[in-house]
Structure formats: C-alpha cells, structure tokens
Length: 82
Image (cartoon, rainbow, N blue to C red; front, side, top):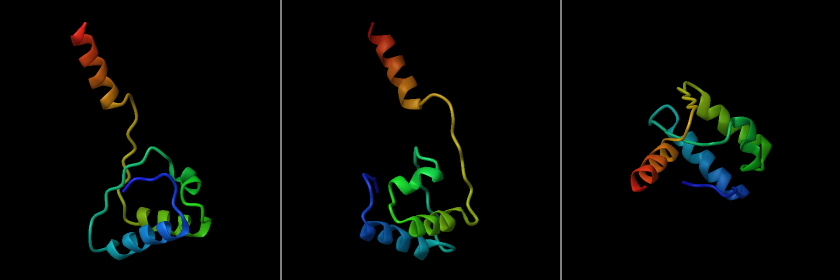
C-alpha cells in the first residue's frame, strides 16, 4: 500500500485493517516519515493518533539510519561501468 495522501475513507480503511489484525497477525510498515509527520498524509488528527497508537502498541520499531542501500548499489554499479 503506497501513499500520496489519504482521504477520510482511505484512512479509515487503513485504520480498520490495522485494528482487525492487531493482536492476531503481524504487520510490517515501512516509511520514510516519522510518526510526527503522519498527519501530513492522514489529515484527520484523531484518526492518525489512534492509528499510530494501534501500530505502536506491543510493537518493535526499527529505526534505520545511514546511507540508502539502493544508493550504495547504484553507485557501485556506476563505478563498475566506468
């Protein structure tokens, strides 16, 4: 599932999917936005807060830093083409 911005219906659909799976199935979400910026995508502040709360409850958050793996691989490929 990608995002360009969620309308109210899309945000509610995502919330319902996460709520349904909470406690019974795993969920993996990758994002380049910290939770503090999710309101830029999910315009409803209350819904956004509830969604983040559901995701973080009993979660393992992995914060990856450093140079992008794709950037490193592309640079390696370009170097080999020279």
